[in-house]
Length: 253
Image 1 (cartoon, rainbow, N blue to C red):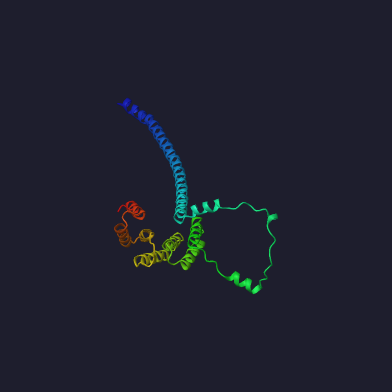
Image 2: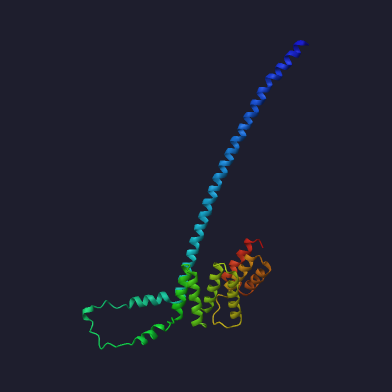
């Protein structure tokens, strides 16, 4: 009996270090796993950052492509490309200045007459004025483009591009973050088109789409759905209707 009592404490003492060593090993293994998880998290964050950069770049490229397409479409619609080609073909050969006849009598112009001539504003034809405004927008000179479109509407209120000018002014305000003015311009375009006060209204579907987007941004889904319904009912096959459906799908509606 005495021998048994002596042996039991011996086993208890012998097992204690083994259990403690095993716990230490387990802790070390957990620390290693935690370290690996942390390293993996850092790697995933770097991958996510790189992915976001690529997405941003792709978005920029897509925007540039759309702007190029808009410029090309404009040139085709206005016949600018064809006209420039014809004008280039008709360019005269460079004259030899030595063969140019001497000028006739020099007309004396009084200073007052010069001032009057300079003060007279230049009114460009509608195609030139619209093309220059679009080019300003395409390089994101938004304030200059806005003024150019406003000037276009002032001098060409019944042009086939007037509805386009209204639309791009609203789009500029939207990009500047002025949702109130953007909405007001798009609504004005809708009223003019629905009232038959503009000769061409090819931008009317896009105006409804922009009004839908503005109300989506505000979280006013009832009003957004109202514009969505109008767009789909009136212009079901338009590009604006296709984009509207994509937006609704993204929102899971």
